[in-house]
Image 1 (tube, helix red, strand yellow):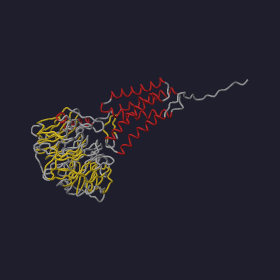
Image 2: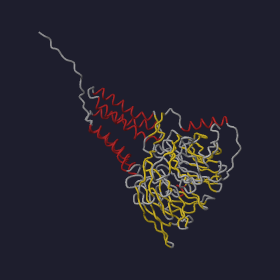
Image 3: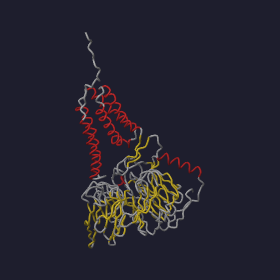
Image 4: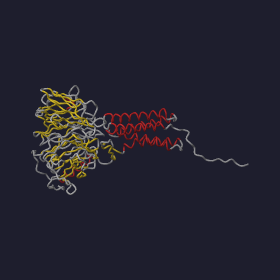
Amino acid sequence: MAEATTTSEPVKSPVRPRIWPGVAILAFFAFLLFVPGEIAPRTTFHFMSIAGGLLLSILGFILWWAFYSRTPGKDRVMVLLVFIAAAVVVANLIPPSHIMGLLLYAFPLVAVLCVGWLITSQPFSWQLRRSVLLLLIMMGWSTMLLVRIKNVNGDMIPDLRWVWSKTSDELREEESASRKAGKQDDAPLQLVSQPGDWTEFRGAHRDSKAVNTRIRTDWEKDPPKLLWKRRIGLGWSSFSVVGDLLFTQEQRLQDECVVCYNAKTGDEIWKFSVNNRFVDAVGGDGPRGTPTIKDGRLYAQGATGKLVCLDAATGKQIWIRDIGIDANGHAPQWGYAGSPLVSGNLVFAIPLGANSQGTIAYDKETGNPVWKAGEAQHTYSSPQEVTFFGTRQILVLSDFGLESFNPADGKSLWQFPLTVRGMNRVVQPNVIGEGEVLLGTGSGKDLGTQLIKVRKDGESWTAEAGWNSNRLKPYYNDFVTHDGYAYGFDDSIFVCISLKDGKLKWKGGRYGHGQVLLLPDQSKLLVSAEDGKVHLLDATPNELTELGEVKVFDGRTWNHPVVVRGKLFIRNDEEMACYDLTETGSMADPAK
């Protein structure tokens, strides 16, 4: 009798998980991650969509596995316990500022690994599939132990670094120690004003116009010459320049610092520290505001609201206040970003206080509060001084809209409420004529720039809407105006629009989320791109004409550039540099 034969076949898994809900969850998360950014980029709607989509996706993932995965009960419990336990363990091992990154970057990785494995591993036994699934969950969450989030660029793309790579603080400390070891004492510099000083944020009128300044423009034959480059602490402050002294704010370890440098060499002269650190994985750590220099004193505001008055020559403290405490205010999501405005005998700041305490004025000699007023509850803009029809006034742009105050007592002169609320308003109001103000209303659909027309009839003031344009939609990127045109960033693309009607003249410069400075004497623009390059452009409405570029930094660059007496001073959150741009081509020895 012939013996029966058997054929060996793979043992198929008796468990067939329902996978399509996991795929749907990933598609839902991808939709909320990318689509709102196309509709209304970097608005409250955009960020709430990301946060809401993230939380709903995590909840959906848990519910899917717990109730709809069609796996044995013990496997459901085991996978969920590992999923939650691994996330909790990693969350306790990483910096608190990275928790959102853990959810925003590691969770999608975990979800993709799990769903992808369940789809591709169907020929294998369930025991193997389950074991690898648990391993992938732990590996996915654990990736956050290998990297740190240095920052996130304007398009919400993270700059990830290995955890063992040196931090900005460590690199700066090493360079500083090396320079001090080989440095000989120089003659002390004095605080001596010179023509062309740049004494506050974006210059004398806060409009980023370097007047009475000429630079060489043939960068192909005679490019900018590097005079010095130094490591610097974290922060998005720009520079103020008085004579040969350079002032900025930066984060050094746990101290928020105001620092004075030698503008000729980049060497530190003095430092004033407040034990304070603002931490944000998206916007970046450190102060945002730029020091203001007035009558030998320096005024600077930190990211958590510490407002200091120092002797500008020595860094010695004269007084210090907390604007949030003084006005029952609150720092916005990415920290106080305003730069103090000094006018007359007062210092103005925006504490975002409750009960009509959105703006505050201090006595500049004593630091005592003088008045509080205004409806601002959210802004990253700074106070702006203007004079309309012979009347000096302080402008504040915020979530409420545009407000004008009598600087002496805070009395409201006029208001222009903006109907679209919840915007992250950042840029400075731009005066383009008598009673005419151009302002950025926010980045997103149906937003952009708005012309405001202010009129005075006797003692009465009115403010009405002029044209509105969505062809220039600035976010945190200020724009400049010149000879009837505005030049700035429409989201991440550089454009030119007419000041007559807001119509687009040209669009094309892809410089990311950078900043711009105008050289009106030569009708030239210096564009500091987000990728660390500086571009020289013609300020002309005919077409985009680029004359040259120079690579300054490798990292994300958001800080406003400064040009003083033919020298370009520029920084980001890691480095600062000085370039010679003078027409004569004279330059210092870069090796010094």
